[in-house]
Length: 105
Image (tube, rainbow, N blue to C red; front, top):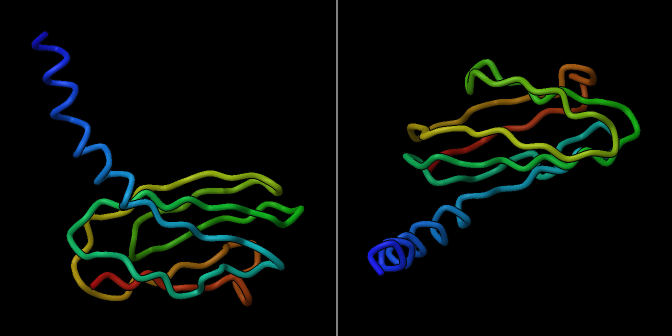
């Protein structure tokens, strides 16, 4: 009985965590959206869907993250919690077109 009560108490927290997922799409060597607004002070699960046939690397020096996303696949990275500000990111394999920014507010 105590385990059931404990599990029920966790459900609201799980629902809240699901609200902190954000998505990016890579298509034609561009990130969409190119400006992603997220809440400051929260840990974010960033889902990345690479619709291109070739791999792309999500990279950000300011976020201290880099991850290769193979072509026609999906993956994720965790970022944050972030202080309010702008955090640029880019696709290392197509850095002239694959650019964006996370805006924590």
